[in-house]
Amino acid sequence: MIKAAVWNVRGLNNVAHQNAVAQLARDHNLHFLGLLETRVRLTNVLSIRSHLLRNWTWFDDYSGPGGRIWLAWNSQDVDVDIIQATAVGYVLGKKPYFPQLEAYVRMNWMGLEFVSATSNGFYFFQFKTVAYMEEIIEGGPWLFQGQPIVLQCWEPGMSLRRQKHTKIPGRRFQQKLIFEYEWLPQRCKLCCSLGHSAAACPEGRKGKSAPVVVFVKKKHSVNVDSSVVGEVAGPSAEVGNEVEDDVEPEVEHTNPSTCGQSKGDVAHVQTTSA
Image 1 (tube, rainbow, N blue to C red):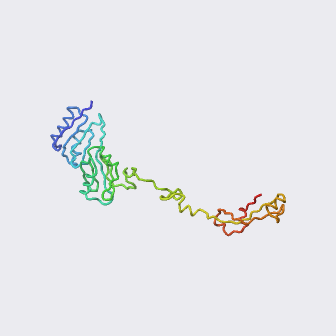
Image 2 (tube, rainbow, N blue to C red):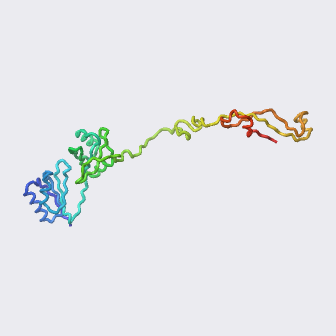
Image 3 (tube, helix red, strand yellow):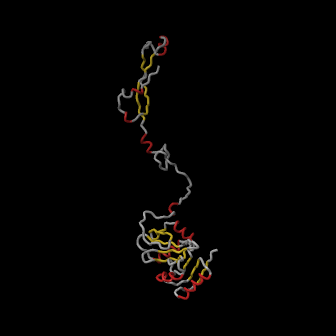
């Protein structure tokens, strides 16, 4: 069975309080210990921990403004994973005015408890729960005065360095935009434009060829009885002779580039009927 305890020590700078904490862990054979309101400065942390609970693993929240919470556990008996609810980030470009940035994030980010800043332009954002923090990080990118805020989950021992960015992580611009319209406009299949159909497309009219009128002569042979010829063709008609009719126009759709060619060039349009 794992034994754990939490103690509001109200200061660990006093040697008597340090001895009392060590005695508590030995008497109850504790595996996990939480200390509140330690009131120890960051510069004195290592010197106090070195003789308080030796061979134990420590964690603290000195990313916050107070740094009042210490956690310790015996790593030989238990393994503890710290779930962070603090995000660290910076604003690309010029360092912003901190009160304006704080007012912006408090107005737009839900679950935010406090904001702190470092001298090199990094900001710590403490949230109430991990869910709030993940929602803000994954819901970006967030813009402050037109500049992106680069965010990531803070971890103990993280090196605070600005990175080179080719893209800003986030999913806000990946969502679909759904809209409704009252009617569907016509869409041309030829030029892919809206407002007219393919039949009325001006681009389609340019490619069509103009009709060309070609005059050809029809020829037919009369191979009937002479009496029939006299009645049909008149006295000047003879059996076996070719009779030429009047010239009749015949319309053919051809390419405008063939206009002006001789009759021999358009001989393919001539027809002969029996």
